[in-house]
Length: 198
Image (cartoon, rainbow, N blue to C red; front, side, top):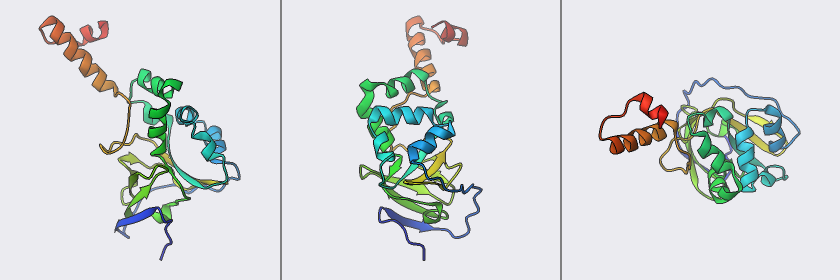
């Protein structure tokens, strides 16, 4: 029987899982050291600085980071991403980043082939569906990057569950809002060229 950290609660199990994933070798640096050296987490690191959570990931206490790669932010408006990274959005940045931090070392052996609830650092429950390699709707890409004070699980897409906090405007939503606004002003259906001009 696999021992699970106390903040992981088993929902269902499916021993027939067959997921492609990569298990990385260990590193003696901190979680922040790894994210910085990898080069694909510049936005997440900026959000950690804004939210003042970066210090937690260089401390000896172990965490698991479900780490959003920069590519996960591409469907969102650059202005909303920059706004979330600004010092004026510290509370929102904290609420957003805290969802991805689990206060224990959680490896894939704890969740592959299972559905579990994981409590994040503020006590909210996050759903990990290890039968499909998904964390709250976000696809897990690379798993089990072991570092000195925890584990990194790579996320290539953004969380999509309606239960979670995502204060970012999607590009298509902004375009639809522009279309609706322009149609109300002109009284006619907006064409793509009009949207670009707006």
